[in-house]
Length: 431
Length: 91
Image 1 (spheres, rainbow over the protein chains, first blue to last red):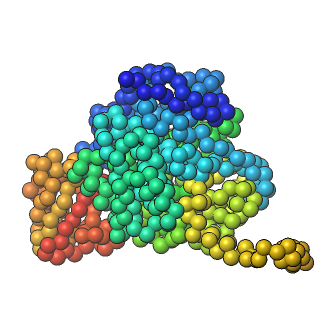
Image 2 (cartoon, each protein chain N blue to C red):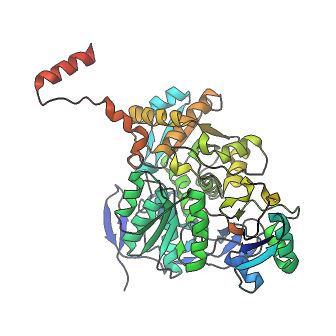
Image 3 (cartoon, helix red, strand yellow):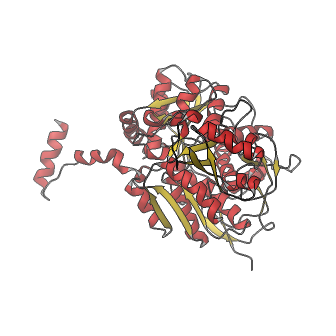
């Protein structure tokens, strides 16, 4: 029986529509490192050299025009020709199309012509950009007949997998470091997956999940489904250029954990330009990390090709990956694009969370604080230009990491329910 | 020193679907030398042309990334375990 398909209308409403196209077929894969061809498979590793696999697209496939894209439902699937499937998705069909918010105050503060925030912090359903990658991964799992999905996560991916699994009616096994922020734990457990807290950091969890995927044959989205998972990130690039009126920004700043977002944004911008959707120079790309875990920033600064892993020590838990899988590729892109990496202290990221909230009304998680703090430092270092049209990617919601700014509650006075006390407060505030 | 290597399935396929193999050596690198002398088909899959590990393959000595404890020169003890893990995306 065909399943009903949820679509979003032009103003973001949700409606039922008949399914279109054929059953979902994942594209075949090939090794980025050695070029070895592999068929479509829940496998992310080249059997020849252990390099990462990526989907192979038909270079002769028909691509849509701007006008054709414009009338499609507002989800990441409006760019489906650049996603690693043939046929129609069956899960997560209403994910994507997050706001692009312009901020003149921040533009003035940073000395650039215009500045926008790409707000995946407002992504449906789990308030981070990980909804994008899970949207493609869970459809790959479905196509491969993998009933159980899972992930290794620093928090946001756990939320996204748990929510997507709940919606799809699939069991999920989710592995996280034991000491994640409470918000990220609860925003996972509320969906009733099997959440496993591991005594170790994310890199320990990662190693364990690589073995779990091998042992149980589950669809671990960022392990054996990684080739399909990663492509979901490209849709952020497509959304940005479309929301800018089919223009490329001149510069973009992203947080970096595993480094994949940097590489996939580049791929998305490149594909959009190759398809004739936009023209002009690709943006300079800047990557942000907390100083307490900045292996990609330090690699880009050195300019060599040897990533030195680190043991994370930062409150930016969602970026605390000491051995980033795409670190080398991200570093190369930062440098080749004319951009750079930038590290920030934990104090700077907290200040930036507050600045973002007070100047734009956006509450970002610690990764957002890292990204804005890094942008400020890049501006101070002269990396940004007066004519820049800059996009800052805010990839996760502040409600997930309230601990970082919990002390702001202390600013709130506690009073008795008497008007005289309010009068006194107002008087003392305006004095 | 005798150490136990734990292989991912893509490597196990090259050694008769065995995921656990013992090898001898005083360091991780020497133990790998011993391993590939027995299974030459593993050699280009564990190290690049210069004998260095690939950037997308991580070797763990017990629970430690070998890059944090001396790389392939890390000393090993009897009963140590070396786990080979291909890179995993962020989360």
